[in-house]
Length: 350
Ligand SMILES: *Cc1c(COP(=O)(O)O)cnc(C)c1O
Figure 1 (spheres, helix red, strand yellow):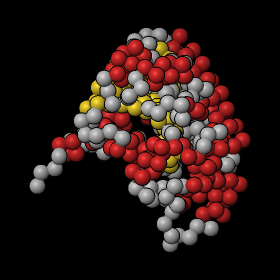
Figure 2 (spheres, rainbow, N blue to C red; figure 1 turned 45 degrees about the vertical axis):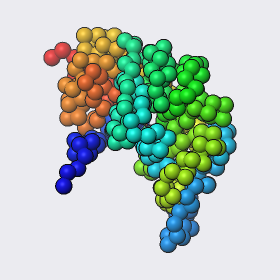
Figure 3 (cartoon, helix red, strand yellow; figure 1 turned 180 degrees about the vertical axis):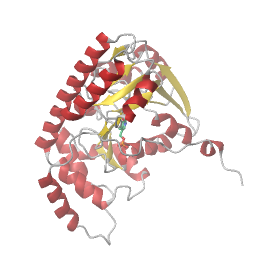
C-alpha cells in the first residue's frame, strides 16, 4: 500500500540525547521543584482514582492558570503541551489548503504541523536585524487565513512590542492571529488580556519554560469563551492525563515560587548575555553578534556555530546549533561559569 508523502518524508524529532552534565540546549528552567513541593505533589497523586478517566476540562489546572494571569478560566483550554494545542488549531480552525503565514526564523515545529494539516504555508522573512518585518507580515496576513509566530521568538530571543502585535491584529481582522507566548513570562508585552477584545486572537502558553515543568506535557490556548468552547469540543476528550493535571494544578497555585524562579532566570539570562557579549567584543571575527534576550536564552550569530557546538559537546556542555548561530539557555551560576570558561578557551587563538 502507498502512504502519503507528507508522512513518508518525515524524520523523527531528534533532540540531543546522551549524558551531558551541562544542558543548555532545550530552553528548560534550571530550577527543579523544591523538595517540599515534590512531597505535596506526591500526596496529591496518591489521591487520584487511577481507574477513572481524567477531568476532560482540567478544571483545577485552568483555574490555577487563570488565577495566576488574572484572566477568566472560560477563556482557557488545556492541552498535552502547546504542541498539541497548535495541532488542534491548525487541523480544526483551518481547512486543508488554508493559507498560514509564518515568519523565518521561528519555531521549527510550526512548519511540520502545518504540512501535516495540509495547509499552504507562506513564510515572511525577518529583517536583517532578525525583528519581524511587520509591514510585510500585515500585507501577507490580509491575504491569509491565519498567522502563527512566537513572541518573544525562539530561536532569536527577540520580541515584538504589544503595540506592534495590536497593529497586526487590527490590520487583518479576518485573519486568525496565533501568538505563541511560550516565553512571555520573561518579558512584559503580552496580549493575553486582549483575547476577549479581538475575535481573531488566540494566545498560546506553556508550563514547559518559566514554570519549570518541561517533564509534564501541559500547554494552553487562551481565546474568547466562544472559541474556547470550540477548542474543547475539537480536542480529544482526555488529552491531559490525571497525573499531569494534579501536578500542574499543585505547582500553578504556587504563585510566589513561580515569580521568584522567573525573576532569577531573567537575572541569569542577562548575566549570560553580558558575559557572552564581552566575548563577542574580544573575538568579533568569530562571534558576530549577541542579541539582547527577552527570554531565558540568548542567540549568538556566528559562522562557526557547528565547530563551537561540537567542541562544547566534547566538554559535556550541550547548546543548540543552528546553521548561522548558537542558542544558549540560561543555567545555574555554576553551569554558566563552566560554559563561559570553555567558550573562552575555544575562542583563544591556539
Ligand atoms: C518550548 C516552546 C513551546 C512549548 O511547547 P510544549 O509543547 O508546551 O512543551 C512552544 N512554543 C515555542 C516557540 C517553544 O519554544
